[in-house]
Image 1: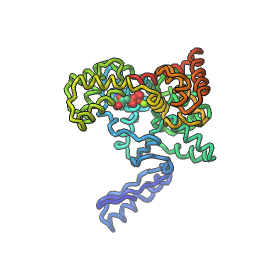
Image 2: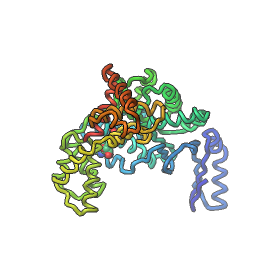
Image 3: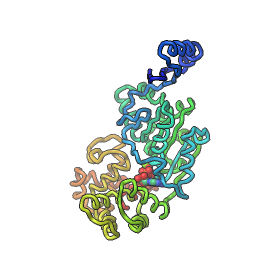
Image 4: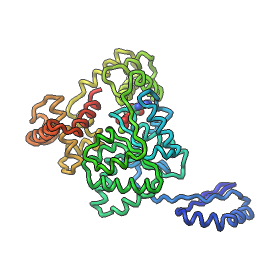
Amino acid sequence: MNATDDSVDFSITNSYIKDWIVNNYLSQIKYIFKADFNISEVNIILNETKIDNIESISPNKNLYNIGIELNSTYTFENFVIGESNKLAYSVAKSFVEGDKMCNPLFLYGSVGLGKTHLLQSVAWEMKSKFPNKDIVYISANKFMTLYVDACRNQTTNDFKEQFKHINVLLIDDVQFLAGKEATQKEFFYTFNTLLDDGKQIILACDKNPDNLENIDKSLISKMKTGIVIDIKESDDELKYEIAKTKAKLLGLDCNNLVLKYIAESFGITNRDIEGTIRKLLMEQKFFKKEVDLKKVSDILNEKKKLVNCEYIQCKVAEYFKITTSEILSKKRDSQFILPRHIAFYLARKITKKSYPELGKHFEKNHATIINGCEKIELEIKNNNFDTINIISNIEKLIFI
Ligand code: ADP
Ligand code: MG
C-alpha cells in the first residue's frame, strides 16, 4: 500500500484478484476512506511482478539491469540521428509506445554503431513512462552464465520463474547465443512465453539474423517475427555530431575544428570518439593543457602504440563481456575457450611476438598458444563466417 494525504494506492500481485476487488469492493473501499480519512482517490494497481530475486546490480526501481551498469547518458536525447540510424531510432521510439508492429524488434549493426545506446534509451524512457512495467536489460552472455549456474545449482525452475514476469525484455549481443544449444533452448522458451503473454522484446545483435550461424533456425525465425532493422556505418557528419554531443555531455571546452579532426580521423569508431574526448578532458582538467589539434593527434597516435598483448586481452574481454582474468585463467568452460584462442591469435598477428614470449603474457606454455592460434587459423581457412566476423569486430575495437 502506498498513501499520501489525498490518495491511496493498493498493489495487487494477481490480475484476477485485482479485477475481483475492483468489481466487488472498490466503491465500498472508497466510501470508507472518504468517510474516515477524507480520501476519495483510491487506486487498485496491478503489480504482478515477482522478479525480486533477479540479480540487479543497481536499484533502478522497475528497471533491472543484470550484470551491467546502465549508462545514464545513453538516452534518446543524447542519441544523434543521421541517415544511417534514423529508421532504427524511430522504430525504437514506436517500440516504447507499444506499437505491436515493432515487437519483437531485432536491431543489428556493426560494433560501435549505437545498438546498446538505443537499447538503454528504450530502457530509461520506458522506466519513467511506465513505472508499473518491469523492464530487464541483460546481455545474451549474462543470460547464458545465469542459466548455466541455474543448471549447476538445480534451480532452473527459479530461473524460468523470474523471467516469466518481465514486461519488457531488452537483450543485447544476441550473437553470443551462437553454438550454445542448451541456452538457446531456454532462451527460446523465455522468448515464446513472453511473446505469448503480449510482452515486449528487443534484441540487439552485431549480425543480420540471416547470417547468424550456429543458432537454431526456428529461434532465428521467431526473432524475426516482428521487425528487423539495421544501423548502417556512420558517416563523418554523424561522427562529428556525436563528438559534439559527447564533448558537451562531458564538459570538454574545445573548438569545432578539434571535434571535426576527431570525427574525420582515419578509421575512428563512435566508441573511440568518447574515449578520445575523455582523454582530452583529463589533459584540460588536470594538466591545464590547451586542447589543440596537436594534442588530439598525439592522443590518436598514442592509441596505436598502445596495442600490446595486455591491450588485446582487454579488448577481447570487452567484446565477449568477460574479464581479462577469465582469458588468462585455465577455465575450460566453452564461453572462455574461444575468446582465449582469439586473444592468442590476435596477439600473434598484431604484435608478431614469438610463441614463448606470448606464453609469458598469457601465463601459458608456448604449446598452448600454438594450439590456440592454429585452431583459429583453421577456422579462418575453412571460411567460418562467425569467427571471421568476430575477429574483424574485435580488430575494429582494437584499432581506432
Ligand atoms: P554498439 O552497441 O552498437 O556496439 P554502442 O551503443 O556501445 O555501440 O555505442 C558506442 C559509443 O558510440 C557509445 O559511446 C555511444 O553513446 C556512441 N554512439 C553511437 N551512436 C551514437 C549516436 N547516434 N548518437 C550518440 N552517440 C552514439
Ligand atoms: Mg553493444
